[in-house]
Image (cartoon, rainbow, N blue to C red; front, side):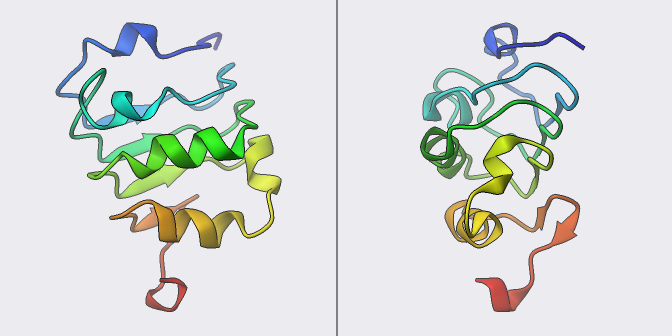
Length: 109
């Protein structure tokens, strides 16, 4: 696939499940996309593995705004090589229950 950005998804305000795995995404959209101001406000599942996302700071900032997000996959992105990747995401995304196809354990919180 060749999807490189989220521009076409901004009008999908009721989107709840999004799988854009195996594309050319280099960066997640800014926080207003995830909190409903510029995109879906009720995104529950976000599958974005096997892309080229590398900016740790902007990734965290964006995902912290995703208050409804419970399922997230970012595996096989450069951002996954960051120290404490899982621990930081689990404690930064408010309602996360499943990260990279592995349940979030109570001990991780």
